[in-house]
Amino acid sequence: MSDRFAALQREHLGNLQRFYDKTLETLGYDGVMIYSGSPALHFGDDQHASFCSYGHFQHWTGQATLAHSWLFIQPGQRPVCYFHAPDDFWHLPPRLPDQAWTTQLEVVTTREVVPPVPKAGRLAVVGDVGEAIAQRLGAECNPSALLAALDEGRVRKSDFEVACMGEANRMALRGHRAAREAFLAGGSELDLQLAYLQASRQRESELPYGNIIGIGRHAAVLHYQHYAADEPTSRHSLLVDAGCRHRGYCADITRTWPGPDATSLFTDLIAGMHALQQRLAAAVAPGVDFVDLHEEMHRLLGALLVESGLVRGSVEAAIEAGITRAFCPHGLGHLIGVQVHDVAGRTAADGSPLPPPPQHPALRLTRELEPGMAVTIEPGLYLIPMLLSPLESGPAGRLVDWGLVDHLAPHGGIRIEDNIVVTPDSARNLTAEIE
Ligand code: GLY
Ligand code: MN
Ligand code: MN
Image 1 (spheres, rainbow, N blue to C red):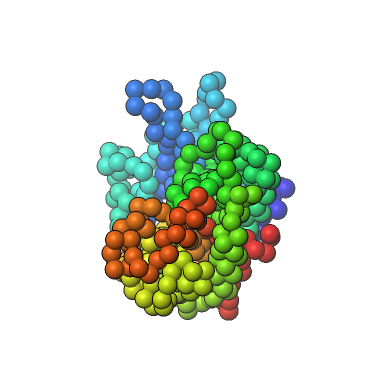
Image 2: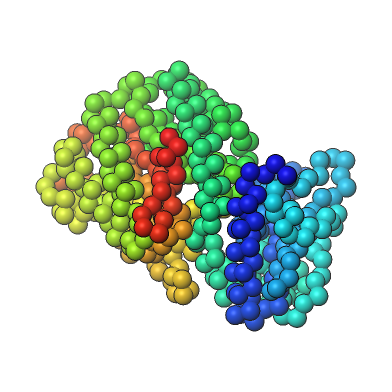
């Protein structure tokens, strides 16, 4: 076996099995079936949508696009993977990869789409299945207590998972470099996307999320989803928020660059945001409350807005008036793993909900940081007309320099995002240590 992650993956699977054994026993289940899922058909058509396997299936196998497959986990037993490889002359059936999980688990290759019916007492089934499948299996369908416990089991990453995310970061950064070079050469957003995919060695349907490649004003659209094919007529800025997967595990990296038409104020703001982002990244450590860190982002952003002349008055007044929230309406970051926005960010370890503060509804992570958590740190500063315009006519209007807002608007915005793992006494920045 040429799998350089083999020893780490075996250790990961051993820990995972102990965790499942304990969880199933605690909740009184004799087994759980985990479905990988299957791609949807376009309505009235014979073409499938692109597909991503269920997170709990990936947690065991790292297989991000394996459809119609199942895992059967029973306490104290070797887990079984029913690996779907149909006889098919239209498509190439999936083949088992040269990876440690294929020997650690018992793998049964199956041509059937219908699930095997395991013999077990009290059984649960989790995944994108309906009641009909659950009844056929004689299983409880997606029981909430079990799902919450399994989600919690994904929060603290093993060494294997961290190594996979490190590799995903390495490949994503190759893509980022290629996209920037294509921008400097005058390429369109589509050219940049194609350069990114080529350099990071992935097809578009395998990305962990749709890459965000915004030139100029498009950088102000948080999840900008198009790739303009025409060469840009002005090049004030480039924002690339783009990722990669390695064995299911995601990278989620953002870089913002000034273009040849950038003004010095915008270039200075990028430098200010970079320093701010590094400060927040350096603050990641066990015991830090992520809501507090998010609020610190607003204080630092307020200070940058005042220092640059965009906002007049005190930082406190800018926060109080909602000005920093209009410039940055998203959260500081989120958990990351086999899902880019990983599970359990707003649920405490005991299962109780931790909703975001009412003034920060978009914050996806509201927990205290613990060793093993992998998070993104991604502060932003944007010129979003639909958020800034309403301020102009209200009491906050006199605190903003609207001339500078107009001056900056063609640059769209800035986001800088790294992926960070909390260690027992501080943190590792997986992105910065490769870059
Ligand atoms: N790429 C989406 C995000 O940063 O959360
Ligand atoms: Mn992110
Ligand atoms: Mn991102």
